[in-house]
Length: 509
Ligand code: ADP
Ligand code: GLC
Image 1: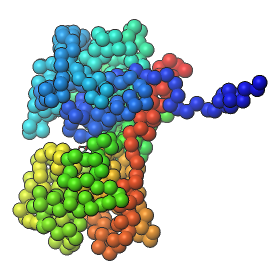
Image 2: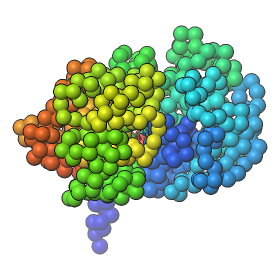
Image 3: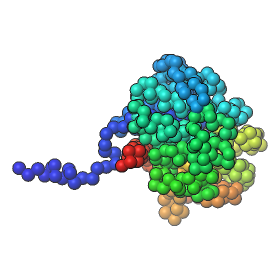
Image 4: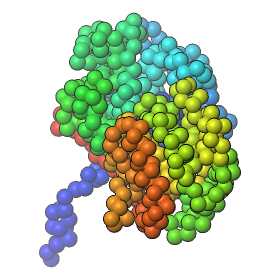
């Protein structure tokens, strides 16, 4: 009997997802639903679930911040005490745990470092002075936990400067350890502007050895640079969109680290973030006033009216609303929007719904706008997850005039909610929004290139004129936007491929 089946199977090239299930330890400074300041938390909350769905064994390790609600998430004691050797002293902590959607999450409990109201800074946005020690400790404690509970990771996945040292610790300290010796490291850079640069006096505590305090590793103009060390030591590394990966390879986009990224060659790449559609889907979203779908948009009109009422806007269904949900940081370009917004509400029929917190000057500016332009601009200064869902659902457009944007999640949420993004074509915004074509009506949003008030003003003006003059194009774009699929499954498969390459590099294959 010929055995055609077997012969044919042998000719099929293995897909990147094939291979044994991996054990992955993710160490991060924030994770949804426990603690969040930005998109990093969304990613660390979603990617492990998606990896688990692909059959991998993932744990998440993060700090037990003072603001985390232990009862709500049934966080219970797991291990105590746990000793963690830092470079020049031993620290003691406890470990707590819970499970979210099948993913075990472990919390490092240290009163000394994490029992504070903020994640990184106090209420006045002053960084905690011991941040290098806090996050150096978190990282070592995460590795120690793997040892103490006998979790032999194939991959240790670090995120941003806060846990970038994991890669270095694995190579400097644990290269032949029975539990950690086989672990390869992956570093994900969510924002290269935040590098963790601190005074060299913290170096002995971190235990990285003075011989490594060189300009190609940790040293940066006499100071310590956590992210630079991570770039040097990680087996593979990525950022969160292909365009941002290219931008960070340039002097301007690399914030001083382009040369080191370029040195890593093909070990550095861009993987687009995904969207957790269990949280961000207008068909099922329990947080919004009414649910809707691409085939029945009636609920979106209800969401618009409710948003107008909640934010003090004239409840007129025929005036377009531009929504904003953002950290008020230089990166996000909301100073550019500030230069355009007054002219827009004076010269055009448009309303704005703004939610944000951060820069004190911008907070003051945006908080006064509803008083100066009543019925036309609504704003809320602070952090409000429910309101962010209302703005996504109730607005017609969503503005992200970012100077740079490694990925950006809100434009992807907006697409699913049929709220057309108006974005600067940078980083992940460039990769996820398709430019409107006035001739065909194709596209999913409105893009501009120059980071200027002028560009913001006229691009929002372009969107408004499309709303009034070409409503059939609006309908076409809304349908196309809502059909976009940025689910995590695809991104998670790319991470698995990255992990496998990291393991191959580590083993010198
Ligand atoms: P970044 O991480 O740079 O802030 P992202 O677009 O990746 O940008 O992610 C921002 C996340 O934080 C989104 O989930 C967004 O809805 C949320 N967010 C930002 N500011 C606020 C706020 N003031 N209130 C509620 N959610 C916010
Ligand atoms: C950073 C970036 C943002 C990205 C997020 C998650 O906060 O500023 O663009 O979406 O990380 O990767």
